[in-house]
Amino acid sequence: MLPSRSSSVVFPVFVSGFLLLTLCLSGCMTMSSGRPPGAWHDAYQPITDDASTAFVEQGLERAVEEFGQPLIPVNQVLLRRSQKTEEARRYRLAENFSLTQCVDSTNGVFVIYIGVDQDHENYYALLGHECAHLINPKITDWYMEGMATAFSEEFCAEMNTPWGDWKEHFMRSRREPYALSYRMMNQMKDAFPKAYPNLIQYTLVNEENPDWRYIDIDAWLGSLAADQADEALDIIEPHVSVLRKKTSNHYEFAVPAELD
Image 1 (cartoon, rainbow, N blue to C red):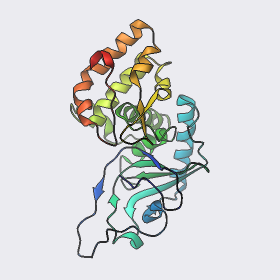
Image 2: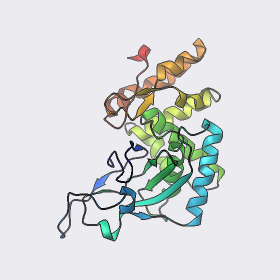
Image 3: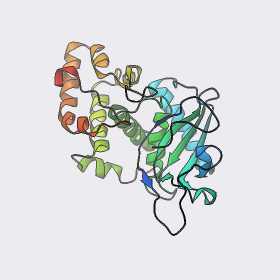
């Protein structure tokens, strides 16, 4: 996980996304445990091609259409390949992760980090996933991760952009939390197309990380008719045993009270 504050601002930095963290701890050079000068995102390689920029702009528009206006108005999105720049290579920094980070909530500046190269088959799948997190980067839980992955699939299809090998992997895996959350939230969207986007409006503070939030599933279930709530519980129940074990300081999963 990236540090919780940027060197250039004093407010909390909110992060959310598809985390594939790898610490660079090997090599023949002497590694520094300090931090590079400047903002953290300046330690990573910029992505500046027009196709990626246009994809994110359209992805944000599509996410707003589905989920509503962002919690923090988005004025600028900087793109980074999460590999260190030459200047930062001697520092011990995580690499090859995908993440959405608000670095300036006053001016609406966000950074999206992508953990693969632009010619990788999953590049746009990851980029689409991160676009959904622009709506509310404070939400870090498995419901939101599944929603972001389901969004990525739909948006990539609309853009006629290949979705890499995610579908095959996510439909096969029985224990990988991203796979389970993707299947769960796809079912939820199919069952409740009108109520589904409202999930992100029901949140609770993460007590271990008060700057972050997680979806208050019981509050959302309470907004449904009784028969719909029962159907939603039937969708969630098969995934509870795995997802409740995959929580951490960075990922929450609120088990519905009736299933706890």
